Length: 402
Image (cartoon, rainbow, N blue to C red; front, side):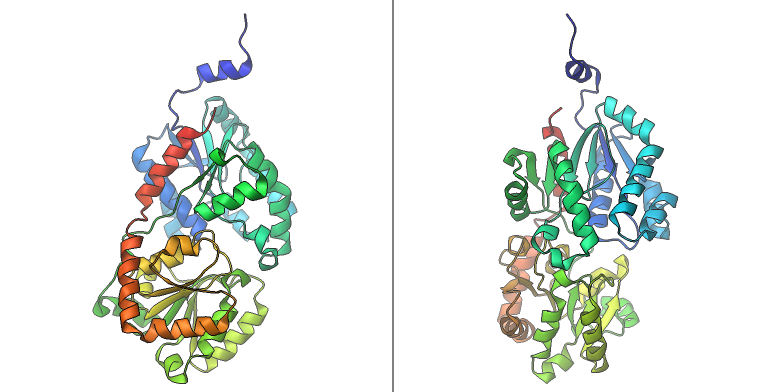
């Protein structure tokens, strides 16, 4: 009596459930939030699993943790990753790139699938893998706010993601709110989706002004002398309304605490860039562009306050970093931000500029409120660790069916 192929495969693959392929294509400069997530998973999993149990893939090919980190430090992520980074986002180009990578690594992927490895794709869509896959879905903004994305990206996600979600044996989200959205939007069984919060690194903590000066001086900033927002310049971050709210503050407050924006150039932002250029001439707004990772902890800790009034976030890592840094924070009452903030941030309606301006003034000037928010924020931020994220991710791997 013969066995069917599925049963035979289960009897011949490794019995350990921690045999994982982790796609680290997103770990490249400039390092985005998803890139940081993949980086911290790679570091944490590498510390717990041996080279046989965990294999990192970049461009479909194996890469060691050391090679990945050296590439990140030097700004060189390898030939294949450099090609991908230069491609404009077009569905036909993205599909061609993934097909090319798949052809280059077909033998390796087929062998790993036969050996029972689980492929974890931490960035929505990735390699075409013949074995079991687990996908991290960071948010569904392309569904809820398609006008905030380039049309090509929305079309790509709508065309490709539903079938990948159906084929995957497991899904991860960064927040419970997004988990519920995935279940409702795609009709996914609740036990297939796990919410695993991100973490914050120990480098993000309160600092003395004297310790901040070497970094802040490079940006012509003074400790406690600015209102900070860390966000890509794109519509979903709601920066135009933040600019409106800041402009409604008394002139004395605008001058004392100019709005400082740190983040990449983004997309669909021609109107915002025009406004920022005019506002910068007044000295009440500053654009820093993309800030090096090593400078971010000092930039947070040196701010008078922090604001992230996004229309939607799947987690909101900058908010958590600000909370850990000991500065009072404002966030919108939408998406996952209330879930992350708890009682550690001042929440406002993302569409109400007047309410946002009033909240900013309180955040900058109300000493008892500031002290209460900082204490609550630091206590809450302490519960979000990358060690917890890695541990719960390993548990999610173990729950994936064969």
